[in-house]
Length: 505
Image (cartoon, rainbow, N blue to C red):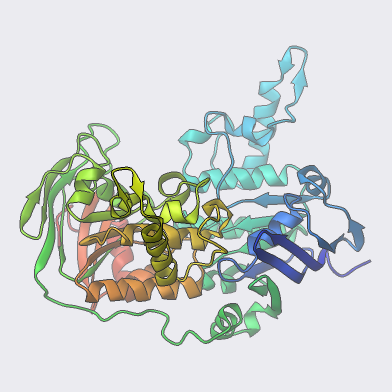
């Protein structure tokens, strides 16, 4: 009997212009939580898709419990006890929790699907993890964290032995993260082997036993988490030491450049933005912190003209703006890089060039005449600026890794030469090397006089990059902290309690 639950040996996989995996090895023990680390484009997702039967490798072998297996499709993976929870959740929103868990294998009664039995069986599974979720609830009504828990329950309902979790904490609060970790530990105690993909280095020590690092589609090494310093792991990932991870030349007391007063989403019910006022100075990075659902993104949507019926006064460089649509905001020099690149950001079937230049068509199209040379120049400028890894300008953006997609999206909005840049979770799903590059670009932009609003759920990012931090709770601003006084404790105090009665500090 093999000591490993899973062994992947010498896995090779290529795509046009890209060697995604070259002789990659990976080993997982039963009852182990094993982290898979690497920069965007390192091959993590490709390796997982090979394991899940989505991709067929050109070379290599997969062993489960010491037996060689032919994983030639999704059903073959499932039959071998492999379940994958992808970063983008794939539940059906207008079906119940029970219907999602049993989708395609519903228990049948005399008159079709036995809905009562299905709901009872699903509830039993949910109660096992004390989730407080009703099996009869619609997925649409659940939070992202609750939907993730349903995905886990669904995966376990197939009696999985190997569970893969891709960036499971990217959209959930700290309290929900702890609940997720507790479920993972319980599953590991029951002998389930868990492969855990995350860019949050701080999570490794909390929940992982070992870590395997990939770089540029090759296997770098495997380490015991408790015995390996974080700097060593970063050096393994990026092939170099990242001595200056956060790049920020703080500014103080520059002139006020952007001012928002009494921003309100105009809704009578389910109000998410309630009398929000704040200001941004010239060349400043202003951080917006708060728990999931605090109203940070919704506030920016109001400012950018995305929320119909919203109210409030917006002033840029001394001039009051009338923003009724995103076009009005862009014409005024405001750009918004949205939180959800999949839904709100990218044209997935289009090329890198299309996605890079769609907001600046006027620069190379004149009276239906296309200046292809200029289009190529703009595309290349922002590929270089963002250090985007792509085999060509014509590569479909959907074939890029998540982090490289994010770089294309940020580059697209930089091409508009904004005066105010709003970045909503700019480094979500982005590796440490790419994060350092994005921070450097943000710092350079502020030196050129661009003002930046950054929404982030990663407190170290907020603490190290922001000149001032506004904290939101339940649709209101509860305080503003200067970079000299900012700390995790100070932010969390304001993020969990309406200490300032909804007024600016």
